[in-house]
Every structure is written in structure tokens, then in C-alpha cells.
Image (cartoon, rainbow, N blue to C red; front, side, top):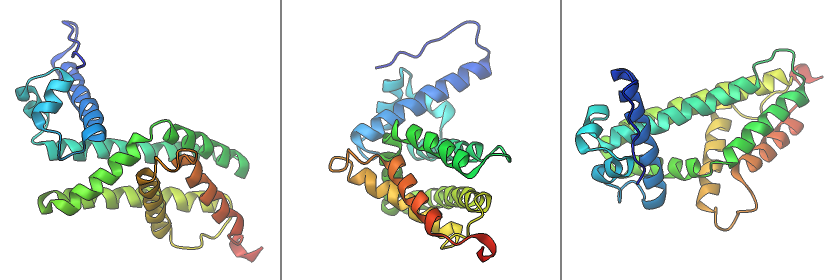
Length: 210
């Protein structure tokens, strides 16, 4: 169990945010190790070093925590990709090199892809959870679609499908590879996403047909 550090120097809000972060990190570990269904709210609080009261001070339920955990991940991932496109003077190869760095960071934390599968499955199992999970997954798809449209535009290429379809396909690829992890350990998810992205870009016609 990870003890939750406290400090008299922390303001009330800083302490609340610290508690919240520890609960999210504990939930992430347990959901990966045990699965969402086999992890109780009490387990999460104990893993983080807090009481159940502290849990309820930050999250209404285990489901609400899971949605927030994945929402934070979605925002970070889309922001990371957008950052790779941030310099308008970057060449095509510089953009792809920046995306390769993003892919390496993705491969350093393969547990997120496992959580993505768990999140989607829980949405199918629980009608009460389905609305929130579907809304977040759609938002994530739209964020990735925007980034994909920018990648093709910046490289002067026409995408072979709508960016939304490509985004959904890359999400499916990530989740599928997560399920095959034991058999495809030599093919990291981020690396494979870049293989497919580079292939699509290479085959795509130039804007204007040039």
C-alpha cells in the first residue's frame, strides 16, 4: 500500500488535489491488475492510503472515478499529439519524428491500452455506465480525428477515409493489440500505430493531385 503523504504546508485545495491524484493512481493500478469489476471502492481507498470517506469527498462512485481517470488520459494523449504538430514551420519528417516520440511514450505505459479495453467493456456491461463511457469515447475519437486531419493537412496529403473513421480504427487497433499483448510483446502498440500511419500517409495522394 502506498502511504498518502501529508504536509502542513499544503492548502486545503492542494491537499484535496493530492488525495484525488493518489486515488486515481491507485485505481489505475488495481483496475489493470484485477479488472474494474473485481476492484472495490474500499480496495481503491486502502491502496491509496485513505478512508472511504476521503474517496467520497472526491468521487461520487467507482464508476465516476473510472470516467475521470480515462478523461484525464484522453486529454493528455490528444494534447501530446497536438504538441507534436505545434510548430507551423516543422517539416513533414520533423512532424513524423515528433509523433514517433509520442508513440514511444505510449509504449512506455501499455497499461493504458488495457484500461481502454476495460473501459469499453464496462460500458457494454452496465447500461448506467454506458452513457458516460460512450460520451467520453466519442469525445476522444473526435479529438484524435482533429489531430489526424491536421497531420494529413500539414503533410499535404488527402486522408483515405474520414478522420473520424481513421481515429476509430486507430482506437480499435490499440485495444486489439492490448488484448494480444502476451503474443505480440515484440510489436509495441505505439510503434504499430506509427507503422500504419506512415503507410497511410505514403499511399495517400497529395492535395490537389500533385
